[in-house]
Length: 212
Image 1 (cartoon, rainbow, N blue to C red):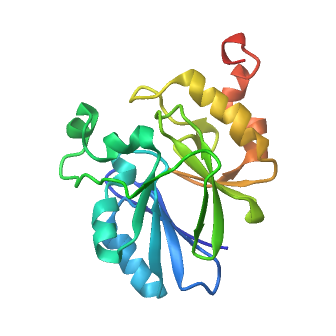
Image 2: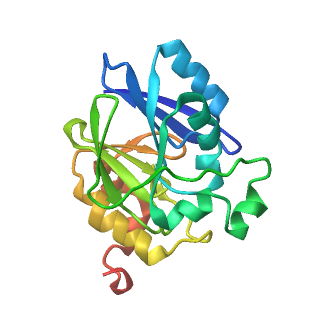
Image 3: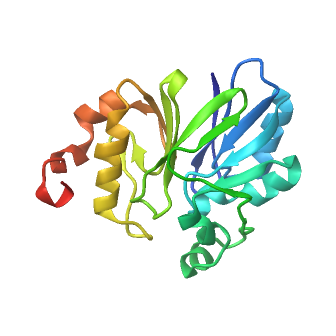
């Protein structure tokens, strides 16, 4: 599996170009700058067929509408975050000056299978950072793209439409079940589930009755 990480956009979100070696097509996760990503596609000789959004916050959808226009790819998001990406909540208007709203072509749900770039992506519903947050597992490669649900030794904030209990449930019940997986998060460096089980500060709350 080939993964090209491109930190870009207004707050340097990680956008990912992902494909199986030898495939002429790819999937793109959370395009934060359409121009930069499209130029990289041209350089690599790749065609994007799927734009997969982990959630609807402005920094992760900033380039989605423009990239769809340039490539013809379809945009996928969980329905609970679709209005956010389309520009309806006041949060969007307050924090996304200059952003083109993006309506989804298809919705994501728990257990959905997306075939793109010669790879199979399994959708995990992981609410908490937002109501419609999802992660994408490539089980054959023991890899998961977590957006802002899980970072290296951190988790996403919950004060912009999220819920801390849902986030802990997503972390402890869904992501921590992926033993041996490499994590590609929405910001900063990659990590592993095994590392997070040992060192993530949120582990201190794992046995708290509020999260059980």
